[in-house]
Structure formats: C-alpha cells, structure tokens
Amino acid sequence: MRIKKFMAVLMAAALALGVSGAGGIAPAKKASAATFQHLNQQGIVDAMGAGWNLGNQLESAIGGTPNETNWGNPVITENLIKAVRNQGFKSIRVPVSYLSKIGSAPGYTIDSSWLDRVQQVIDMCINNGFYVILNMHGDGYNTVEGGWLLCNGQDQDTIRKKYAACWQQIADRFKNYDEHLIFESMNEEFDGTYGEPNRTYYSNINALNQIFVDTVRKTGGNNAKRWLMLPGWNTNINYTAGDYGFVIPSDNYRSSEIPSGEKRIMVSVHYYDPWDFCDENNTAITQWGSNATDSSKVASYGDETYINSQFHSLYQKFTSKGYPVVIGEYGAPSKSHVDPVNTACRAELAYKVCSYADNYGCVPLWWDNGVTGAKGYGLFNRYNYQVTEQSIIDAIMSVYGNDVINASKSYMLKNVQSGKYMDVSGGWAVNGANVLQYQASGAKANNTWKFVSDGNGYYYIYSALGDGNTFLLDVSNNNSSNGTNIGIWENTYCDAQKFKLVKNANGSYSIYTKTSGCKSVVEVENADTSNGANVQQWEYNGHNCQKWYLEEVR
Picture 1: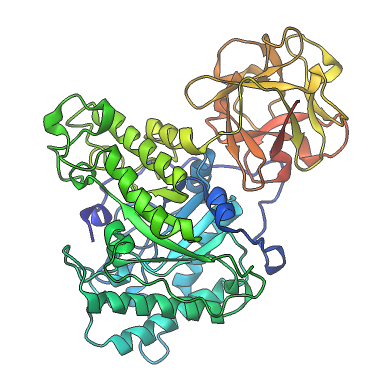
Picture 2: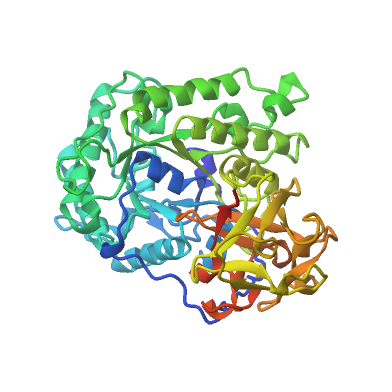
C-alpha cells in the first residue's frame, strides 16, 4: 500500500459547525427495491459524474483492527458529505477494511456493529444524492497487519471461502438498495511487487472477481441488476488493459430485466502518474504541465500525451465494448510548502485527467485522505467542512459541472416539487421586488433568466425584466440565515448575487448561495405547491422543493 494511504494525520481538532434542520423537510428516504432505475453504460457514467474518495477513514487500521479515526481523521458526519455535495461531486467511493472484524471459520461472521457503521455512512451519502462505491479495501495487502485476501497466499481455497462468506453478508445487507450503490470487489490487489504480474497470482485475482460477481448476484433483490466494479492487477492501467492476464468475469446470474446487449460490470483502475509528482515524499518533482516554470522540477514521463495514451487504451479494451471504467483513485498531494507553483500544476493535472476521462467514457474519483496542507491530498477540512483546495475543485468542475448552461441562452426555472416557475412578483423591475413561484404557459420577462459566470465557479442570475442586464437574483441583505428572502436587485457584485449550480441525477439543479458559504440553496418555502408561494434561502436537505429544472427559452 502506498504511503498516501497510511499517513497518520496530526490535526488540531476544530469545533464542528452545527447544522440545523431545513424548513422542517425530512431528508430523502433510503431508496427501495421498487424505485430501482436501470442505467445503461452512458447513463451510469453521466450519473456518477465527478467523484471523491472518503479516504483514510473506514479502511484505516491499526494492529489489524479498522476504525474510522485510526489515522487521525475525525468521525464521519453528514456535514462533511453535504460539503462535498455542495461543490458538485456526484459520486463517493467509501473504502472499507474488515480484517479483525471478521470472525473465524466456517461462518466468517462480520461484526454487526462494524457493518452498522458502514451502513450509516452509506446512507449519509445516498440520502444526499450520491452514487456510492463500497469496497473491500485493506484486506488484500501483504503489508497490512491481518491482511488475508492475498493473491499470493498459499491456501487459496480458504481465502476464497472466506471472501465469498464476507461478500455474501455485505451484499445481503444492501440487496434492497437502489442503483445509487455500486459494489467494488477489492482494491489494489497484487503480490506486493511492482514488476510484471505473476500469471498464477493474476489467475487468483480473476478467480476472486468471479466469486465476487456470482456471490453478489445470487443474494437476489437489486443485487441481481446493480453495477459491479472490479480491478485487475494493482489497479494498474497497463496490467489491466494489456495482455498480462486480466479476465472479465462472466455475469451468469444477473437479472433478466437487463437488456441482453448491455453490461453491468465496471472495470476499476487508479491513476497516479507521474508518480514522482504524485508521491508526497518526493519534494524534488513539484511541477507538471503548462504551468511548470522549472524543467528540473518536472518528471521525465507522464505528461498530457501519456494521460491520453493510457485512457485511450482503456477505451479500446473496455469502454468501446460496453464496460465503463472507473478511475477509482487519482490525485496529487500538496507540495506548495516547497514550491508555490505546485497548486496550479495539481489543478491542471486534475483538469486533464477529468477531460480525458470524460472523453473516453470513464468516471474519475479524486483521492482525498483528509490531510490538508503539506503532503496532503485533502480537498476539504474534515473538522470544519471548509474547502481547502478550491482551485482543484474548480478545475474538476470545469469539466463536469454546469456544462449545459449557456450564457447566450435564456431559461425558465421550473421547481421540481410544484412544477411552477420562478417568477418576479408583479413583473416589477425595481430593487427589492419579491421572487415567488407561479404557473406559466410560456416565457415572459418576469419568469425568464440568464446565467453569467463570474469566472470563479459562480453565476450571476439576471432577470429579463428591464433591459435584461440590470436586475439579478439576490439574497436579501447578504444574509446567510435560513428563511432569508430571495428577490431581485441591481448588480452590486457582492456574494448575495452569486450562486453555484450543482446538477442532480434527474437533470435538475440545486442553486447554492455563496452568501451562506454554499450550505444553503434557493427553495420554495415549506415545499408549497401553490401559486404565489415564496422563494427563500434554506440549508440544503435534498427535498424536491430545492431543485429546479432549467428550461431553455427558444
């Protein structure tokens, strides 16, 4: 396991910011079997969008025993999950180790309290609209105390029985979850050496992947039709896409509901190239890409053409044949303490990885280990939920966020809950005119809006009233409180008039207010469906009254 996974974080605990309920609206319920939505290859890739890893938490183990705070991170809270969602990420990978939490043969029973905690975290993510990847993470390392899922282990028969027993328990617990949950068979599975794969050990990995697919499918429920994800040798792109022994397992027990021409298996790889740049312990190589100013600080390989070549090989081998590829981990640590150019280079790498992933039909998930500052991969402070690397997030979202919003177009904003449109009361083109919802058969100046980027990830939302370039959607008095009124006001270029749009899985948008620190959104008060219901600011809770469809005016 690379050092990035094991770094114990020495962080000063800050007070967690309390978050109260939003308008009395209950959070989204757990999806049930009846609501399972079949997503084909393009559908699942689009739905997962840009992703993020909840790293160094549920997989962190000391002495063979996992605990979410072992490596210095705080207890996982929903506030953190919401902070990630607020930045536009749509999928989360939740690494989990089991190790000593697994009982003895023949049952290999997993500690129910550990599974309970895993389930709580999965629920936090799904209830906030995420697609979630749940895996078996640290059990397959030769370097981890208590590691047992070893492709080079002597007793493969026992390993396989234990593996099947564990996945049967995990799969059975989650079998009624909807399509938002994806199982990943294992993590960086290999024999601990970094040369060309041992063919015998590779065949053991293939056998484990087949056991995983068969075991999960046979538990029934939605597990017969959900997407399953599996790696090749050490999640290495060359050793997975090349002729080194990787075999995609058969999927003989999947649901007959799935169209015969579609797949439900994904391939998992990781991307940390060039490693000299992506290794937190190498302080000599700190620059990458067009932002580099010193060639002596740039690695000798791994430039943009290399990314293209690597991802193109994934396209040829997998995505062109119906198998989505998930870049389950990518990223580069902060070396800005030794080189101020480093942050811009990291952001450019993130942008390029996401651009080529998007081009070749892959899903990228940034590795975040919770470490912020020197040598850290963290994008968020897990104690106070604040963004620590906005430029990297902006680079990612420049590929995956808001790509359908055109500044030259005008839109009507239709509330998902009520089916009514955002409207300026009375059509008054004056400062302080109130914004509410009202039914409409067509576009008029009072219910038409245009979006103009501020260049930093936010939009000014202009009303078409007046000359169409004067009055903007505005949070009254720049107030961050729940219940603050939404109106229009002449452009003052302040935070009250800046909004971040985050696309939801159903194609609607949540409109986050910068004045609240992107904790709150524009919603219809009390989820009211009547004409004239007020529009206000309230903390995000995922209710449909907080979601808006953008309908282009033609």
